Length: 434
Ligand code: NDP
Image (tube, rainbow, N blue to C red; front, side, top):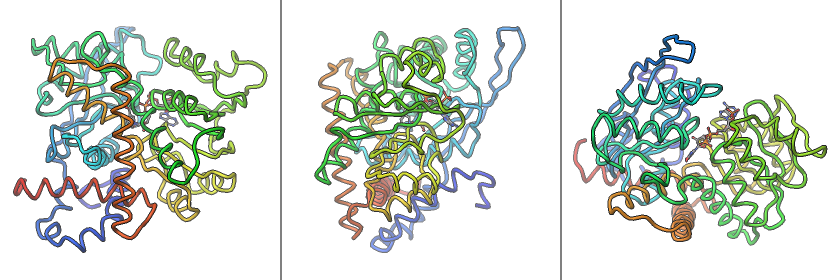
C-alpha cells in the first residue's frame, strides 16, 4: 500500500489474488523463499508518456499514455489498451496484474501487460480518433514488438482504433510486423473470431458451469451489462445457446426487452451509428423502455453477465440478484464484482465465473491470431470457434480440478487464481532472479 499510494483498484486486485493463494504458499515454501509474491506485484517496466494531438477546432489537446509491462515469464507481455477518461496508473496496473494470471490460465505462451490513456473517444470524429491514435503510437512503437509486447483492444479501443494504431506502427518502423498487435481487421492480418472471442468465450464458460450443475442456457432469462464489444457477442452466443437476454445497459442506463434483445438493431446502433442505447428503446417499439441512471442488476434474471467495467456489481446488487433467483454469474468484464458481491454469490452457492477465467477467451484468441501471423496462415471461422470452445472448456475443467485439489470444490475464484499463479510462479523460479 505504501509503495503504490492511491492505486485503489490495483490494491483490490492484488488482495483478491493473495486471499486465494495462501494454501499454495503453505504447500510450496520455495515461493516465499524466493519472494515470488513481492516480485510478481512489481511490474517489470512502467511507461508513462505525453500524447499531444490537435482536435477538429484546431486546438492542441494533451492526454497521458500508459503501458505497464507487468510480467514476461511465460511469453511477451500481452494485454489490451483502454481509452477512457477514468484511466490512470492504478487502473492500468489492476488490469495488467489480472492479465498475468489470466494469461497463465490459458496455458498459452503469453505474459501480462496492459496500457491505455485518459483519452475519451466518445463524441470524437474519426479524424480526431486517428490523430490521437497516431500520436499515441508515435511513442508506444519503441516499446512493443512481436517478441516483446503485443497490445490489443479494451474499453474504447475496437477495430477502428487498432487499424489506426497498426497503420502508424507500420509507417514508423517500415515493417509489416502483423504479430505486433492483435484484434486487427481481417483485411490486414486479423483472425476470425477475435472480435467475437471474449463474449463467445464467456458464454461458453457459463455454459460449462451450467452443465456441471446439470442444466443449460436453454430458456433461461439472462441480463448482460454494457453494450460494447464484449456485451454484444455475449448476447449473440447466449441467444444461439437458447437463452433469452432481456436487458443490457450503457453508462447512462439500461433497456428491458421482454421479447429478447434484437441483436441486429443493437449492433447497428452501437457499431454502425456509434449511437446510444436510448435510441434502441425508441426504435424497438412500445414494449421496450429505457431506464436512465439506474443499475441493470435490478432486473430479475437467472444468469447475470457483467460485461461493462470494474466494480459494477456491489454487495447490494449481488444480494438483489440472489433474491431474484440468479444461479450463475459470468464475468465478461475485468473485476466487475466488488469483493462483498463475490462473498454474497459464493455464500449463496451461485456458480460464479471470475473474469480471469470467464473472459480469457479474448486473449486466448489473440494468442491464436499471433500464431496465425507467425505462420502466415489464416484459419476458418468454424475451426477458430472450435479452438476457442476447447480452450474455455479446458480452463473451466482446470479451475474445478484445482479448486478440488485445494479442498474448495466448486470455487472457481480459488481455482483460477491458484492455477494461474502456479504457472507463472514456476516459470519465474526456473528463470532465476528476474
Ligand atoms: P467497449 O468499449 O466496447 O464497451 C464498454 C461498454 O461498457 C459500453 O457499453 C460502455 O458504455 C460500458 N461502460 C464502460 N465504462 C463504464 C462505466 N464506467 N460505467 C458504466 N458503463 C460503462 O469495451 P469492451 O466491451 O471491450 O470491454 C468491456 C469489459 O470487458 C471491460 O472490463 C474490459 O476490460 C473487459 N474485457 C474486454 C476484452 C476484449 O476483448 N475487448 C477482453 C477481456 C475483458 P458507454 O458506451 O456508455 O461508455
